[in-house]
Length: 153
Image (cartoon, rainbow, N blue to C red):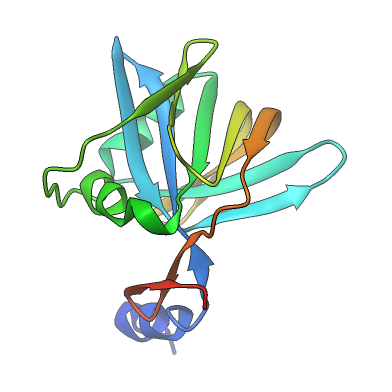
């Protein structure tokens, strides 16, 4: 018996996660998408993984680029999360450029990754990236839990 997708989504929604924006420079444009399917994989070498729905426009961009960025959003960047999730509400994007790769300015953490490998995973593709650059602040992250945004208290 297969678990229905809705039930699976509701169950996994009980796992609190940070909110990231995955970015790339593709076809002459800065591109980004909101993602909470992000995980640290290895410290040595420094590897991370992001999971992207094959229907997402960012999926094709990531398939074609060699590098991508990950920006971990702060509590003040909820509007950016909505904007890059396809629900624009007039958010002003402040880009931070690192060696030609766009990142989100004001983020709690920023990573620049070289695409190491892609892994087919059902209706998603997993992009494994080797971290080549990182920076961070001590600001509080935006948290996603049970389908809603939260702040650390």
